[in-house]
Image (cartoon, rainbow, N blue to C red; front, side, top):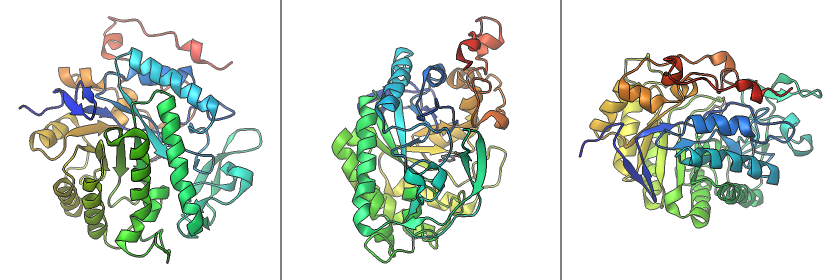
Length: 387
Ligand code: PHB
């Protein structure tokens, strides 16, 4: 059968209409106070419902799991109601949506934490850099990261339970599945990597021990959702958020063999081959090798993301290196990305200055092809101004 971006794909109980996936994208536009999704967010996701499926922006499973101002949560009844607006809008537009479940671990700040406490992590090792928080007036502010508190062994089950509750709430909000965020230097990735995990209990040291928490989260979530609706995201060789591992090949070789034993809808990899950039031509041989190990070990659905162009994605699918390809920045600026790919139409460039925070500008006002060609009128976005 022809494997290309425009052929259908059976993912668990769902039939995807194409293999062009909307990547999880932090946009920091939830309603305040309370970090609650609202109709602006519903409109944005519904505009992108032509994706094979949508993965939501990273969504904190608890207040402790929040690391940035204005990111949405999935732990209060108001947030569940807010996400229900989103899933209804996406479903009405013919789309499918998974929620990415997020705990940031040390990538937080007391300003965002319950009782202004310390962020938690596998070990008390501070990341370098600054946290994005708000001041007493609710205005954005950057503050240096602090040294987190190492979780006690007896607290680890509570972390698993935060993910379980998040998954239950996502289901209650009408999500079609969940993606466990175990990438990009957040809590589960902090457990996986030797740089951030210096523990001496059953959750640190060996590769087996460092993978224990994430595997426990998978087991717990597949009990809630069934294996066909739980995916996981990984970022081998990632250095974002001050990460690194002493032996990535050993870590991801073991981990993906274990993942193959689990019931999972998919494994989603932030592909290290081109370092996330479409403009990079030279392959990173270590990244390419890791992708080969992952593809060999994990026999289920593999999604890749990071620096894919239409041409690179087609080649990857045709060569059988992955089953689905996720696109981030291009989905920010092209609500109708699958149609543009199909027609070979030019893409709107995305504007990084409006990636995080703010209102509808740079969020829902990127034109579709039909709008750009004057065949369809643009919506009246003033309904989304807050004043
Ligand atoms: C970000 O807010 O910059 C961010 C969030 C989640 C990620 C990566 C980056 O996985």
